[in-house]
Image 1 (cartoon, rainbow, N blue to C red):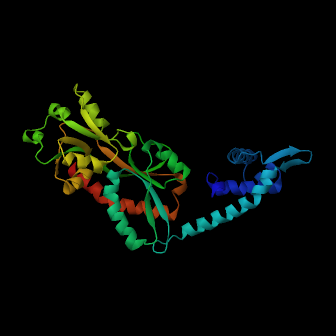
Image 2 (image 1 turned 60 degrees about the vertical axis):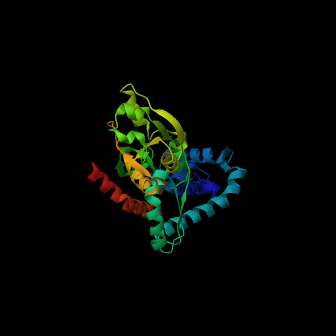
Image 3 (image 1 turned 45 degrees about the vertical axis):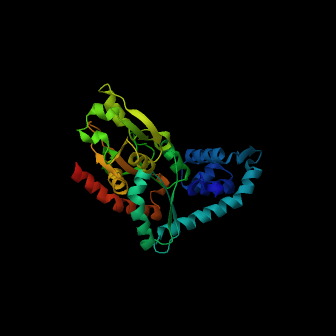
Length: 312
């Protein structure tokens, strides 16, 4: 609903009261807030609806034509939001028909989606998951706009404006094809840097492998990047068919090694961990359907947390 995309239920109720009272002070009294708070809400409504809404006249504040035209829609929207909140309070997975919109890389999809789709089939057969491609640097805006419900990501610097729940910690390894010439001797930092690398850069970003480049630069070394791809699955396919090497998180590497003729190889560099967490907007925090989804994601990825602790 376009009208309520960026307006919450409280602002809709404030709009209704302001137009009924046609006085900021009387509206504040009716809403049980201070006059300054009512004035602030009127300013927010004016900004978001692009109209003065109430203007001064000889008899006091009067509504603009747009405000009068919006009033029936606002009242209807407020009623729909109240009904929606009541429905969410009684969320039942077995009968629900929600669509859960998640943004994440194909790395995390590989770990999550097989188990999540099985879980939906048994516990919430009417629900579905949509994977939404979003540049991870714009995930905060996508969550704020309501374009996605949940982001699963590795942020070197987590955004402060979102709710966050850590999921698991991973580490950097590399993949080489079985029989790669570099496997004939212990891998050194110099030998590793000299290999032909395929770099995964989701949405054109290189944060998954930037730690490796930093560690090499500290030794006066630089990788030779032959190919860049936004997808781990494609990069692994390239590695299996040639002498490229791929840096990636260990949990993706172990799964891809089962699908391709490749080997997981330790990187001869001290590297920081990869912290995978899920992020969501404050508006979704108390929504029962979203709480259920987050609980399911935690339950599925809990073994990943345990595996990380055992591997440490």
